[in-house]
Length: 162
Image: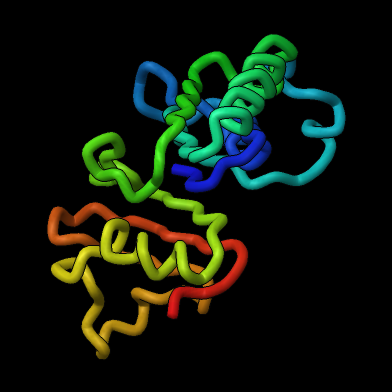
């Protein structure tokens, strides 16, 4: 999830690094046809995510993100196995946005926004023990091991959680 996705550039960048699993469950590199020459020559970190969700409160920016994503798909910057959805809504509206399946949440929010969204993306029942040092990777990145045994990574861009 990219909260405050703006024009979609983070979603496009992350989606472009996704590689699919083959039918036997092993990973396979995407075909050279779906990568530009600069992407092929530079070292990158790949992952296996196939679904990305951007959340943007501004209708104009949400439409800009959709347009940029469509262009990236048409020019094969995004592999065909990847889907990206843009939700035009307030990120705090949990009736519209379900964060329960999120494995990574990228937050481009000012400190007030981070304070408001923290209880949603990091519920008290999933809060780390003070003795559980591996829960916090850096001041701007949290790794949360939820009771469901799913791990959620929360990354803030502008400032750390308070």
